[in-house]
Amino acid sequence: MLRVAVPNKGILSESAILMLKEAGYTVRRDPKDLHVVDQAHGIEFFYLRPRDIATYVGAGALDVGFTGLDLLLDSRSKAESVADLGFGGSTFRFAGPLGAFKSIQDLGGKRVATAYPHLVEDFLKAEGVEVELVQLDGAVEVAVRLGVADAVADVVSTGNTLRQAGLEIFGPVILESSAQLIVARNRKADHMQLLRRMQGVLVAREYVIFDYDCPAELVAQASAITPGIESPTISPMRDTDWVAVRSLVLANEINAKMDELYELGARAILVSAIHAARI
Image (cartoon, rainbow, N blue to C red):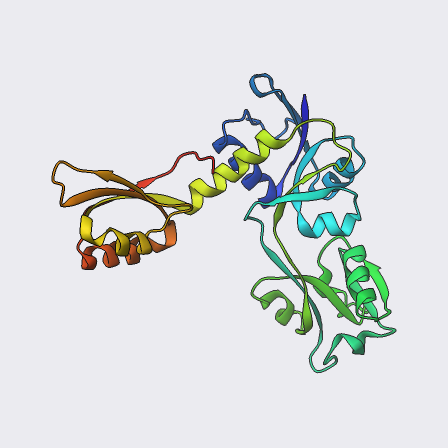
């Protein structure tokens, strides 16, 4: 039976559970449930602290896990990522008092507060910068004001929280993180069905199906507009001057593609959502 770790709280948890549900798996109904068995698919789900998941999977105690790239790297786990799941995006940056730092080289010998000490240490080591790391679990932005650190390394979205604390961003991006599906390197259980289902959910979210009628003489131009993933499907119609075309199109390009097709001469353009997919 495949043993899968799922975050038990936060945005990673909500999105991971939704993906599993869309993929047809049995998920927990009560947030207090920490263990769910999906007998139909031969999977056990363990709901764990997001920060612990990479450690469990890397040690081989569990076969597969959902966690952030930031947490995976900070754990220094032996687990490896097999898919980017497209949610839980975050950006890690350095920040310090206004005008205090121009580059990360200015951090040499300074105190840097962060909730991700190994991630920051490995980044700075690669840059040849040595600092004193101060590990905090949260509210990192107040560390400078309270005199605990000279600078911070933290997740940045709009930067408003840092500015309110009197800090400004400097230096390069430490990491662009997002949710990953990770596996144990010495895994024995087969995770491929789970991986294919997760990839199917991503495709179903990202693409829609285009069906339209197209003059036969314009099918090459129409196919260039909607090339699909491999190739559009072209079917004959009763009127031999026309063909029916079906293709996958990115959901964020729906209206632009419809406009292009209509201007080309295509008609009866219909768009359908995808509920599940295997590519």
